[in-house]
Length: 100
Image (cartoon, rainbow, N blue to C red):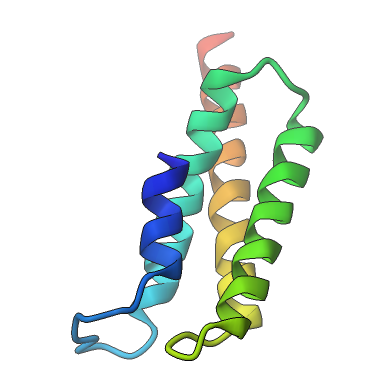
């Protein structure tokens, strides 16, 4: 999954973006999915999972800043972390609901 996301995030985009900033939704949903996969794959504390995802999100923006056909955007990082945080918030709500 990480390889697929890296391909999408580092590859040269060849698709139209009919609505401005739709890539932010992709970042949000993608990092929510990555957060879910990381949570399922490792029994790490939440803070460590978020730290790993923040590191990957930062690396993505750093690499994109060096690619001639991409650009770094702090809002992409914010969308990435929002997606990861939303996953963990939803997870906490589900766990609380199930414990009733």
